[in-house]
Length: 485
Image 1 (cartoon, one colour):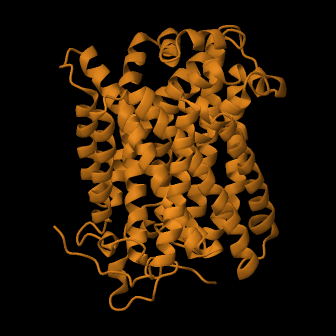
Image 2 (cartoon, rainbow, N blue to C red; image 1 turned 90 degrees about the vertical axis):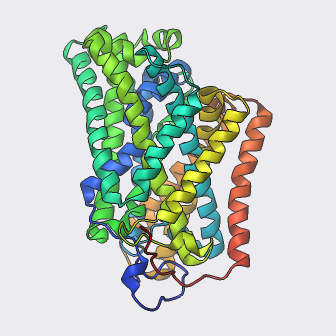
Image 3 (cartoon, rainbow, N blue to C red; image 1 turned 180 degrees about the horizontal axis):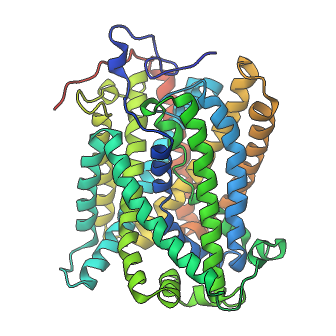
């Protein structure tokens, strides 16, 4: 086997000296990685924010089936992805996989897409989180400060945790995630136990309901809700026994996220009735899920959910921060970015320079939107999350093709289903989703055709810059770990 480790990243020269000092270290297991991945998916944000939009302008009561379809596509993708994780262990994940399968130029282009994806989605969440915090503080009698003040407070907390060892962040996310999943579960169980508005039915999972309205819009929101599941491989270097941990975490994360969303969304449909949920969602898109919580459980649980929405957003911010800093680390270590980014902290063994750089870039994006007087939700969140959705889908298509290419020319794994059939089906499914998203992209960003063109051009430019960088730079030797305090 040609396994690649932290000390021999894809495309890098063989290091010299103390190899162990050059990689990330940690003891995170399957459960910890799954926490990081599901936290990035932000369950309460998806159920409380994205689902009502799917119900209102997508395929209505058929929205739960969109999560099932997305889960099947991503599971097919994950088969090859997990198989390749046994041979490539690198903090760059998608970037490392594409480099190994399709060559370094395309791989660094993929890294450009990855950095754009996670930078954009994190900036989007800073806008939504800032607006959410502002509303909560005012609601409970606090000062009415601008949304960006709260975004900066959250940024400081995320930066502090991201600077430290991944085990610290995983523990924080574990607590937050348990609370938000718990409260959604309570609401879902209460709705099902009380029979919903018109009794229990499974119309949401029938073909007729799924293909009603605009299923393409629901599919793209469903796929967007999975952004961040790549983290299973990103944390491979910091995992116990990554050859076993990463595949298990990948399958567990996709199945758990998909099943949770499907059941939770079905419960919300039943709360208002399959015939009445569309009208209810259109009448009160922002408050739909909280109204269901107040009616079927208690007004107190609705208040708790509002607070947990903010902690859900914080968990997602921390997860994406960790992903970006590790991409920067992988690029710096390989010589495709300034070498200082490839340094690990002397005590925390974290990519601390990449973490600081990521905090700085997030500050710049948020500051630009704040200075322009932009709306944190309608503009910052909507535009950036829309661009991130297209970017991550293209990145996954590249990765899926790279998996096929890698196993075709390496022959290190001869399992037909894992290395050929499932990756090919996953690629076809992803291409179908890309088509749906592009067809509805203007709706996704709630903007004009001109704005959609600009954002899509940024995605193409991010990939192009990565290719140019790869063609003009020589892979560098892995840098030594710093001894920062």
